[in-house]
Length: 259
Image (cartoon, rainbow, N blue to C red; front, side, top):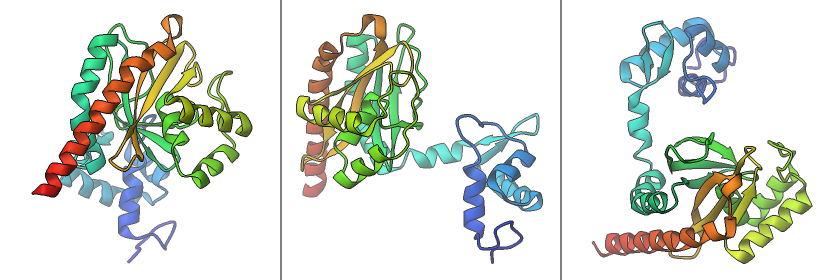
C-alpha cells in the first residue's frame, strides 16, 4: 500500500528512497523536518521511515538530533561492479600518476548525463577542487566529463548539446555548435582539455579508458592550477596509464572467462 503520502501513488520503497535522496553534497546533515520537506512526505511517515533506516544503518542520528548518511550505504556502494573492479584496477596507476605529477588525479564514469567520480587522489600541492569520490559533475565543463561525452552514443550527445547548459564560469563552452566541434576534436586527438571551465584558476586534461571491444567505459584525468598548466604535456603520462589500466582489465576479464 502507498500509505499516507502527499503522492498516494508512491510505494513504501519510493518514499524510503526519497528519504535517502534528500541528502546531497549541499545537505549532508538534515533534521527530520528537513527530510520530510525535501522528500515530500508527511512528517509522521518520515519519522517512521527514518527510524527504520537508522536501525538498519543507512542513516545515523547524531548528537544534535540531525541525521546523516550511514556507513552501511557506503559499504554497499563499494560493491557496485563498475566501482569496485574499475577502482581496484586503476588505483595503483592513479597513485603512480600522483607521485609523478603531484596533481589531482580523477577516475570517472558516465551515468546518464553526468560524470560520476569513482576515485580521486589529491595532495597539499594540488589545486583546490570541488569534485569528490562518489560525486557528480557536468559532462560539458570537466575534462573527464568531456571525454565521456565525446564517446557517448550519438543520440545522447545530440540531446546533451541541445539542452540549456549551465555556464559555470565565463569560459564554459555551452554553445551547441562549439561544444560539438570540441567533442569531435577530442575524438581525433585522443584527449580532452578544459581551461577554467568548471572552476576559475584550474585546468584539466583527461583520456579515455576502453574495454576489450574499444568502447569507452571510464575517463582518467588530471586537474592542475592554470598558472602551471601545460595541458598537452600532461596528456603524456595519462595515455600510458590508461593503456595499462585497459590491459589489466582485459587480463582480469580473460582470467574470469577461463575459470
